[in-house]
Amino acid sequence: MIPVIIYDKCQCDPKKCTAKRMLKFGLGREAKTLGAIPKGSIVLSPFSDRALSPADMAHARKGVVVMDLTWTNIDEFPRLKKVEERALPYLLAANPVNWGRPMELNSAEAVMATLYILGQMDQVEMFLGRFNWAPEFLRLNGPLLDAYAAARDSTEVVRIQNEYIESVAPRDAECE
Image 1 (cartoon, one colour):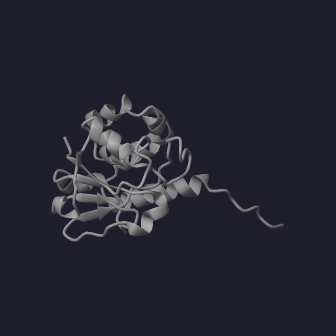
Image 2 (tube, helix red, strand yellow):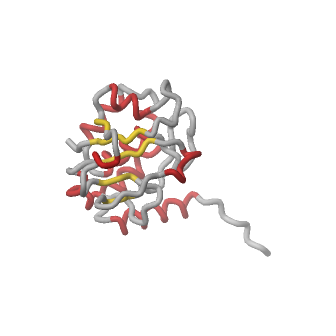
Image 3 (cartoon, rainbow, N blue to C red):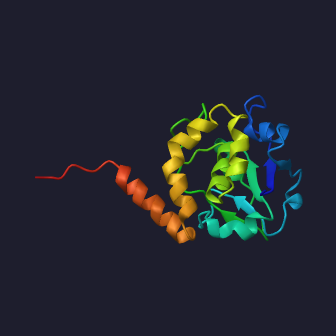
């Protein structure tokens, strides 16, 4: 099992907060301070220049950290030293707030995607009964998650992501 660590900035509606639900159901443990985040762990960050890949498993064993704050306050994202920041590759949100929006995952979706890419399917399955949108998240992103999980490293994950985005991007009509 990969330790899941949750740093909750308490910025969202407590009734809808996936970080609080993960804690309630024992799907992660809380880091009450930034100093409680393990050195060498992976911090999921939209600002990282490296994509998460299966090659990150050694760091993931120290912990995967999700910083729970709202997308409107993303500029408050804490930057830490002595951790490995990783960005998640292109995925679609399936939660009711951001359904279908690329790259606007909630904390539970981010953790599910991370565990999937790292090959921790038993842990991923623990989310299915706790979040009613979780099966939809896997349905929407299954082929991409499978491809990311089969990648060797961050470079290959980015290549897969870019090829996918290119394949679904609207094409400009050619001028005659």
